[in-house]
Length: 218
Image (cartoon, rainbow, N blue to C red):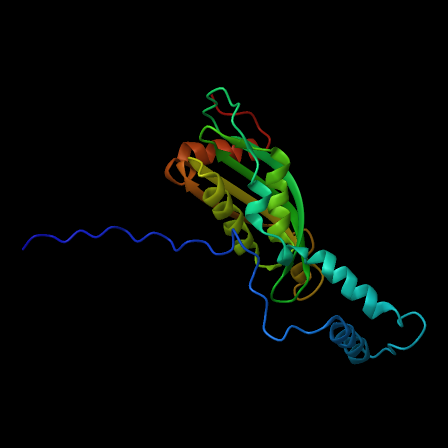
């Protein structure tokens, strides 16, 4: 009997790269959101009508609009403009120490740290600030660090079509540092490698070496 060889199925087309997240049905109004904040204040044991808290619901909802603006932004837009004057550049481009703050989807508490992003371009490169902008779009949503890492890498791969992508995130989670086990200073590190970075341990080592700020091995 002849062997049947099947192609490895490709990952489904990412639906998070070129569109905003689908809105929930029956999304609450701003007034309902402010009422929910008042209910939480009362649940905590304080009086939401007292002078110091009377305007807090409006401020909280306004702050949430800012903190979670990533739900209204399209990641691919951050990478839309590219430049072709690379003069046959054939190594990878690394943006190090991109500061970010996100909020975990389990407790809605902040986690913050640095993202390190590299890609190996094909003919065209993207503006350096655009990679930082991409990190911010995804970070400004409820996240897990693992998912955030993967989304950044997949978006770069999907839009820029580079030879390879590497993403490393290191962050401190306040849901671990100020509650629960209460262990401040603990870092969580996540990585995602695609293309040449996934296939080449040498590229991975160079990436990590440069991220750590040490000289490249000779």
